[in-house]
Length: 459
Image (cartoon, rainbow, N blue to C red; front, side, top):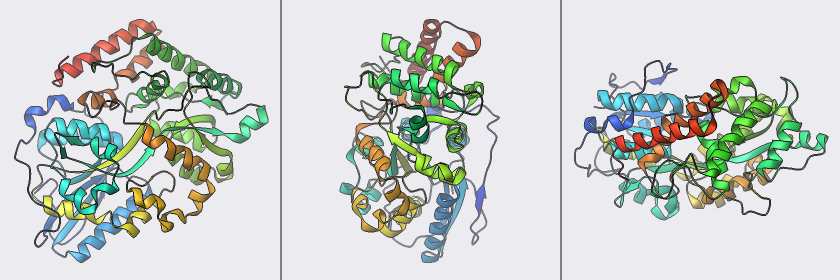
């Protein structure tokens, strides 16, 4: 049985707030530890289901976590010989948990994962094929691009449970009071953010650089994409020293100095978003989760928050996707209850229940099943209707973007870009130590390329 074991007949819902005190074992060092057993030929729903299924997920917010607990209980009621143990980790904690767990042989049967993590997992042989689950739900209901992020040599190793895209959020009331238009370009954003920065109570835009998250990588990726470049060049090498990349690094370092709280040098995504929830930033980049965050923290500001496309180099440039996240679910190769794990995974996609899941954070999670987007029950939601314009901006961005580093398809470099904090540490070196931008960029680029080679990438 997959770790952890538990007593038969009692479902334990374990909540872990783990301090990531131990250094994470990097994925590229795990290849020798990964199980290389043949793919399972089990399929969801074959025979009697029995056994203990361990499910790790990163839905830490109350409504989503409660949904998963409810679905586990309902599945157990329908299958009395199955017990589901749920453990919840933040996305940052999960990165450490699964990499160290794989080395120790302590992984779950089923889990959620970010797209870039899926690529790393596939690279070390950690996942079981899930084509049978996809076909049972309906392959044509999923976006081919989303399925492609977890596909290698025609075999699918993940399926998306929801999608979202990064857009620019702004405070319409602050812009109106200052007589400013919604920025369309990076220069306009900087000018507006500087104008709306006022002491320690209001910042134009927080620029997060914490090394326990991927936020600096995300922000720099936006800038490069707006110029038609990416963080990986056409050969798959890191791209941090092109003229555009250097200008992007300089742009965000300058924005940090002029529009951001000093503490954002250590911010992760939640720290960053919380400032916007509290009404302390005029702009932010995030998905539709900003809606529920503001409603839960500063409901008086709900009607003042709006979404717009990501800034461009010039106002006449085409809009672009920037970054789309198709949050994945996976079954682990080491599991000896793959049939039960797959059956529960399929169970999560029943139409009415799946809509309830999406409505637990309306606007934050967009359907991975195309037909659900037009389902009357899904559309009959007050928050979705109230923020229809912003949700439309996000929906338009989803098909245009990819996970960071996956613009040319799944690559192991994508996982390394977002999990090793090389770009975040580069920015910290620049703003804290005064290191020259070109010097810091060259060092970070060389470090990333060496990590790519260590992971088995050939140039």
